[in-house]
Image (cartoon, rainbow, N blue to C red):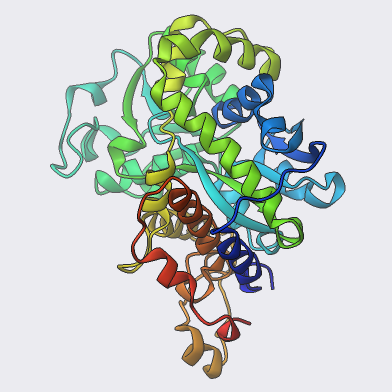
Amino acid sequence: MGFKRSFVGICLVLLALAWSTPARSASPIPMKTAWLGEHETFAVWYAKQKGWDKEAGLDLTMLRFDSGKAIVEGVLAYDWAIAGCGAVPALTAALSERLDIIAVANDESAANALYVRADSPLLSIKGTNPAYPDIYGDQATVKGKEILCPKGTSAHYMMVAWLKSLGLEEKDVRVKYMSPVQALGAFAGGLGDVVALWAPLTYDADAKGFKPAALSSNCGVSQPVLIVANHEYAIQYPERVEAFLKMYLRVITFMRETPVETLVPDYVRFYEEWTGRKLTSEIAAKDLANHAVFNLEEQLALFDDAQGKSKLQNWLTDIAAFYESIGMVRKEPAAPAAHERSYGRLPQSPSIADAPMAKSKASCFHQPSLFLTHERQRKGRDCPGLLAKSNRKTTQLP
């Protein structure tokens, strides 16, 4: 049953690999990957440009899709091995059975924003809720306002978090659902009081003189983009997944150690190739800065559940709860008592319980942790606790 199926097979293989260096194939192994024309794709594109995929023993093909939903729906038709997509496609109940989360590509919470016009009364009120001091507006200035928003998106999630921080709910405002491009166009034409967007449309909003009332990060929500693996492929070829992740982390380390201005020319070229849009150097630098990426140590920290739920599990639980609240995921029926005794059932939607949030079914969270532990050990650093976690009995998993 998808994420309920144990990913421990891969965990054990990778644990065995922790004390050996995988032999490189005589010629690079072809690997299909799937991506959007967004920031998270840049690292893999850059690795491909530099030939780092071949140095890792792989020959990557990068398939381009228009949405994360299209990526996960195309896993069988296009037979891709690794992909980057938002949390929601990865958590969708119908498709989560085919995917395993292997890393976090970035956090987009600084690249999603709610915009108002420069003369909006919302901008006269800031920090009404001391817990969220950087957001604008209060109940009086927001209640009853018309918000243009793409339904069921990260922008929608941000909008609801903003309203909640002000003590409001979606029913307290008038929401018009439309695509982000339509929303920005309509807002520029005078429709609505607030528009919810994500990059790069946020940069267009800036250029038009609109002002951000809140970012996702201001509202206390994180919006991770995930790197996922085709479950069947990862079970069959764990050493290839490992090779990909090592290549990917090589790029992330490079990006973290390289000044943004040095990355800008390549990022501009990448963006034009993948979207047809030519960014200015200023916007390219801003987009790079607005997307946090995570190196080896930070990935380990995100996946670490030694003290309970990991940070990533908490992020994804909150996201899944939102999508359940708007009816985009189904409520999970009660599980048998034996299942409850064995796994400590969580009364959540299938996308939560089947995905790595349920501690008993978090095997796909352990896999990247084991890989990262492996990589850390290879570099001669200690990683207390994670190997001990990897020795959990596999017979307990369904």
